[in-house]
Image 1 (tube, rainbow, N blue to C red):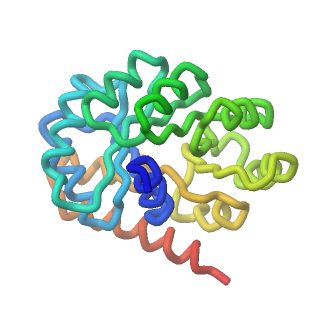
Image 2: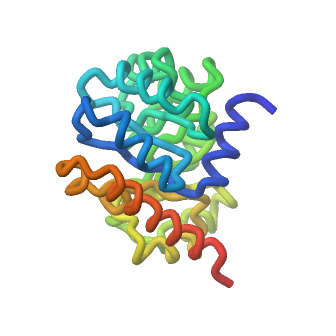
Length: 218
């Protein structure tokens, strides 16, 4: 099994990716560790963060002896993808589909999850070599859009992100999601402001529990 296959398997097994956006740089490692302690294996830092590459490297070092996998999202172009991969990102996500980003990821053997919304985008992304699809923003279309896309295109792996929370996560899995991405619904920003890492851990653990219940629902 290649490293990319291992990362994909880990992301799917986890079922949830934590989107760590707008985290103060001096707290990123502590927040990432707390979220991981809450049961989230897949951690997504964002390419638009200040000194993103340094933060990815720091989180990688802090969690290198754990089962965490660290990726970068909001990747808009091939240069950003290359920078993220050089920093140690093991998966790349974008809010949109860019064929050149997919090409960079495939060349480097890194999991690529472009953002899509329409059947055309989904089909084009998979044809270009995407490993999974990020349905974004999920709140715009809701869970039913997953099954609507999978109907004509087959069992394409879709990870909704943007508007997924503990209250609706079961609906997304029931509609066919293979995993979900979550930011503020999982990451407790008030706890971060208060430097309450136990609160951050508890919030992550609650979301993980909601995901586990959703996936095990008859």
